[in-house]
Length: 181
Image (cartoon, rainbow, N blue to C red; front, side, top):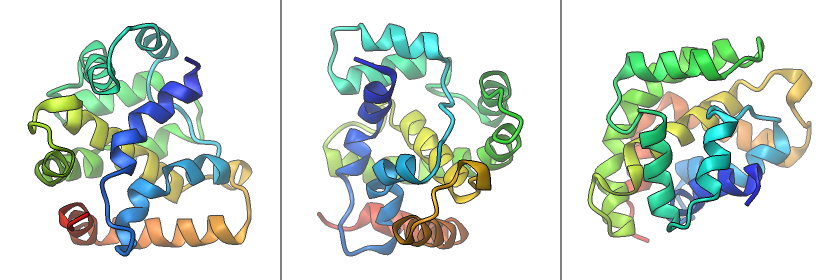
């Protein structure tokens, strides 16, 4: 399994959780489009991805394993920021991801319970807090995509607009998670 495939695996459960009619469901459903619209960095060490891709485990177990390998399963704000500072080397992306780290670390715990309920796991299952933080990193990074990495299209403009609006109103994101499927 390649780096992109494993990256996509981290989003599989995340993408299946929201009702289509909720505006901020784009945080989950827009993940595949994000990569077409903006060349996002991978905020996880490539060696860990390679190791995880070789494990004979379910997707859920792999997510938990990646969180453990990064020492981020039950991490605090400082640990997440430290991780991003070490792993993101691109000078355009590092300040964007580090700046948004606290927002994502604060948001993820609010999403764990409704997420776990939707996908029928325990709140500790599947490395949910880590996965939700990771996905938030990607969405917030996308919302500030440097022009040199951005694809200018109507689809990308709409996705960018929605993600920026949702970031300004975390209550909408939480509502999207709590909505019935």
